[in-house]
Picture: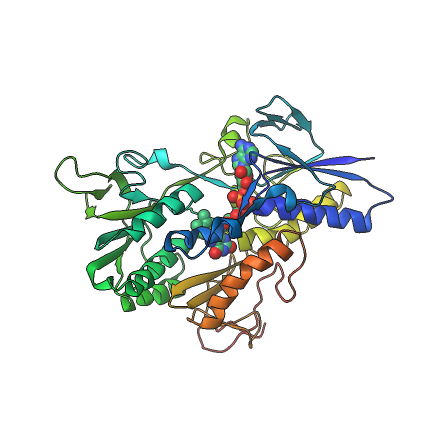
Length: 428
Ligand SMILES: Cc1cc2nc3c(=O)[nH]c(=O)nc-3n(C[C@H](O)[C@H](O)[C@H](O)COP(=O)(O)OP(=O)(O)OC[C@H]3O[C@@H](n4cnc5c(N)ncnc54)[C@H](O)[C@@H]3O)c2cc1C
């Protein structure tokens, strides 16, 4: 009997899940079980989001990182271009803005995170895209490119309003690239760069936080911790300057501000009874990726509430376990509980170098090598890592999205090559 799997979202997680499911059922199940796969997204432009970091510095162009979603999906997968209105988990049905209703046997939620600009007072108001920018969407990153180009000096503030955000290292990468960019333009001594974060350090985990804080210091970038932005004053209309005002009363003046807004889950989640939490993320089992809402609903990527980074790498690793669990669910078998929170990120540090971090729910980013004792250096700047970051875009389009396995890089975090506190490379 044909089963219908509806995938909400045709970004990183939705695309790789649909293609993996298609591959799996085509290879293994053609005779005894047919599966129909439908992907829904509100538009047909797939953006490779890590490239947004490079847009403001003129290091990439739109045609390199935006492609039609339909070209990333196997032709046997149905693509529906419409906005999701809500999900009725009692009737196992998705309702679209256009009026169509999609009944499902299994639902995959892959609708990511959205930028909640309006939730911070003043953000998105006066001075928006003139003095205050974000590079977290294509329009913002593009506007910022012109602003950086005409910036001749002054105070540049890079600010994260609150966690969780997509790719928590991206704002740090922005600071490092700004240091490189203004050096290249010969005006670095005229630019004061400050990184203002709500965290108590440069990053969430202690060893990486210390390494990244010393890199900021080495590059002359100020670090302001535990700064919780309450208000953004984007123009100098009151004569007190453009500034971020923290909830504790501290003020941070700027000439140019680059802000990463609050993130929420997709708005339709809030309209779907019982589906999401107060931020519209979907409560999800951290090891099986089955939702806590209903057995036939699975969640992947930024849309989950699991306690690992909101990152494409996480989405990719989750995909392997998720697809196996959809198959097990349809076969009435126990679910695979093996997803370990594996995350892996290149951190661009400017001047043709990058760091690499690799971690999971239990193991923080450690020094050493990835994926084995002779691989790429971890938590250490290298040209090799920078080339890895650039090469990854090709891997994304040609292996990750089509749902192919990447040799040597599996869902489980590799333990070989990581240095523990006694400076021994872990062998287990
Ligand atoms: C600036 C930046 C840099 C980044 N750098 C990195 C990096 O270096 N490494 C890394 O691993 N990750 C990075 N990321 C994060 C990575 O891009 C995301 O974690 C990843 O894309 C998450 O995939 P997803 O499928 O959960 O969400 P997305 O890929 O965002 O897909 C969600 C989809 O849902 C659709 N959708 C949402 N609501 C609706 C609706 N109501 N109706 C219809 N469709 C809807 C959207 O249109 C979208 O296509 C970066 C992100 C940003 C913003």
